[in-house]
Length: 102
Image 1: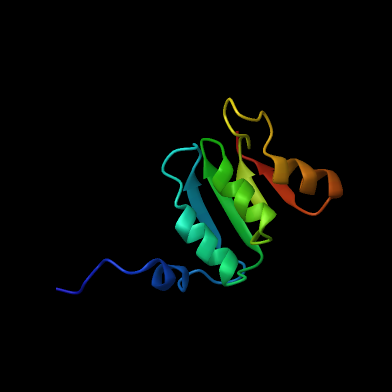
Image 2 (image 1 turned 30 degrees about the vertical axis):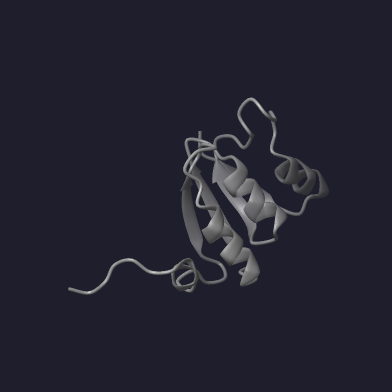
């Protein structure tokens, strides 16, 4: 049987510029090592979809320049921040696109 477990580096090689990637929308269970690897590889033009909202995961991708578009119903840090900081900054600058999926 073929091994199904791969390193973070190997998993990140699957993601290409312009791809769509989906994440859960909470502050829990966010694959930060994978997100950091995408940023390290300088992946660009990603559309990040947040299922039932978005949090630090989508905001990190925006701040790192990996994602330039998000599709979600909200983007904040639960009780820590009503609006995610990178999202708010880039939205005000007109440097990213938000698609509402409420």
